[in-house]
Image 1 (cartoon, rainbow, N blue to C red):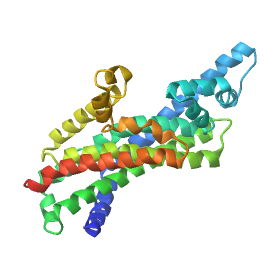
Image 2: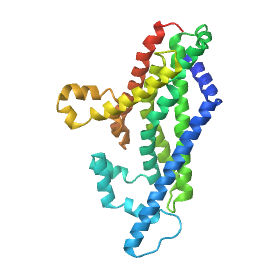
Image 3: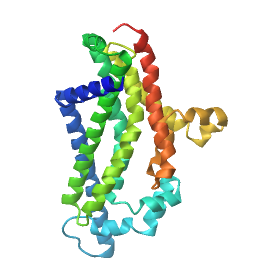
Image 4: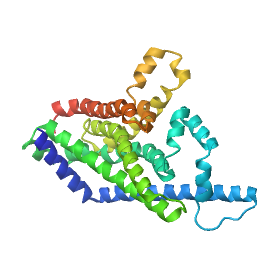
Length: 299
């Protein structure tokens, strides 16, 4: 089964990379990362302008020098800790390269939507066209569906990597202070964490894609389901909702990817490993629940 799934994954990845849809995906990831990173650099430049006006000094050249010193200050560390709700975690994240820290926030914010938008129709499209029948003559439905999941997971990794490259280039050419080697290393690490977070939503998208053979319906179900996951995941984590039924709400919260997002920022592997395992498991659970329909349906 694993051999068939691997071959299906390689074929799916190859077909995806050669398609216009993959080109559009790469453009969105790369263009989106460059645009948001450029906006971040502009914000830093504006910060420096305001600070320079207050100090009655002039600022010339690329932005980054004054803003980087501000981000290394105790006040920024406290602000970051307040935003995260964890002062110690904020202190540990404050030492990360700014572009890597920014890309981590941007990637984990955008990757769920990209995963659902690009993959929720992946299996439904082949069921609709009838091309899935040819695969079922050569392998089982389980191996084929698993291969499709693996192929889309690889495609998601390609998109995240392009996004990281775009962010690196903006920082390299746009900032006065830019530690290339350290930033590249942290972008790689952050990309892995963003992929793990995105996999939970990818598993959901691929599960939805097995519920129907209609492409438009699969796409609509994926987007609606994404909204439900995000909204309910956020609400179930709030104290005022948990007050109504602490045990029930906190238990339900564990089935939403949002519950594990913050822990992915933990610097130590032992601290974030439980969240990594849970996110991968959630993606697998969503996928398997959808496969129950495909396993007993007609292709």
